[in-house]
Image (cartoon, rainbow, N blue to C red; front, side, top):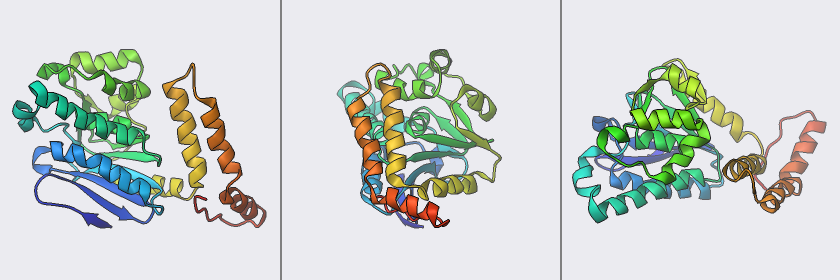
Length: 266
């Protein structure tokens, strides 16, 4: 997998075939996210989106100790007070929104600690695959932080309101089995199997028609966000685009010829 990296805490971007890997790399601080790392995430998502070879984006932490412990608390004194706090929140917003709005399927690969803003990022992904060492929490109340209303939406897309309140009111740390029962994670796997599981899932998605996958994502997200007033014209358009595509013709031919289709996203 080709990667780009830098010195110190960084967000690494790599690609392996149809899978783009975005890695939070700050292992000495459990992959806590610095301001620079938050700022680099939208650029990484844009890079993956612009690459026609990429079909799936996977977000992970370096090593196996942590997905991410959240925002780097060492920056709080200078970066989370006064006007600087607004700048920092804007970086967080841009990172969360880049993941939420990513046109390609996103998977969070979670090992170890997934806390605070790290859990926020994972919840912005389409799916969360975690191993049985994982632990989850949003400890904002333990730090005197008011949790930004914009960041609650991804929580409520995964868990009901009472569970979201339990997370935010208590700041409690939940182990993997409890997180799975709550709905925080999509699939729980044994330690040592997670990378193979994520790769197999990403490849399974990547082999399908990209326009069909993108249409399904668009429809689900729009109806989830605006259940009473979804933009049906937009949703009809993305579905109709699938039927007008070369990939639809390829899918029909492959079925009749009893072979595996080769989709190009066109």
